[in-house]
Length: 161
Ligand code: THU
Image 1: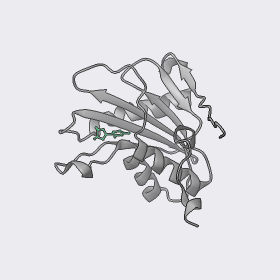
Image 2 (image 1 turned 45 degrees about the vertical axis):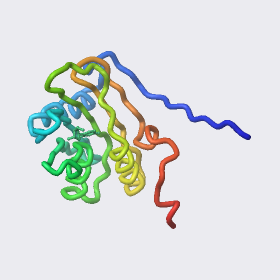
Image 3 (image 1 turned 180 degrees about the vertical axis):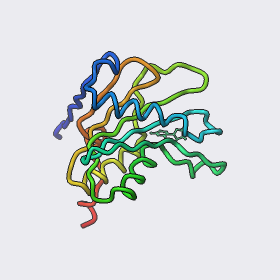
Image 4 (image 1 turned 180 degrees about the horizontal axis):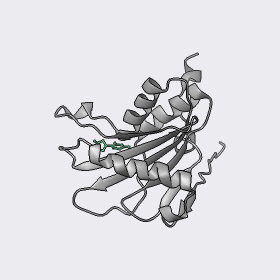
């Protein structure tokens, strides 16, 4: 028997004030997009911001439905918008933030498992990693070098081909 392990490394900053101006901008776009969240069922807003390789910025937010499984996560809304509007432009950075109606969340907002899977698909498609910046409602900011880094042992197309 072999024991295997994988190390996860990421950057942690005390607040957004420690980020580069470009990273502050994409995170602030994610915060701006919290207002467009349609989340009457969970009352949990998620905002996303994308910085594309051509310098364009694009935002997203979670969009819910009375038929709960149809709820769309903010990450996937932004990624699908980018693929539709800028089909051949790689995504450089994805920022994620949240707003809870009843409590202050200080921990960085991590993409759910399904969104991590979709981020990995986009990374494969564009042959380029997507940096992920996350912050809760205040405080610490995490930066991950890629979607794959937060989805160890990911399933991908190589299993199918
Ligand atoms: N949500 C996201 O938008 N992104 C995630 O990564 C996790 C969850 C949304 C889905 C739903 O509208 C609400 O947050 C509560 O799960």
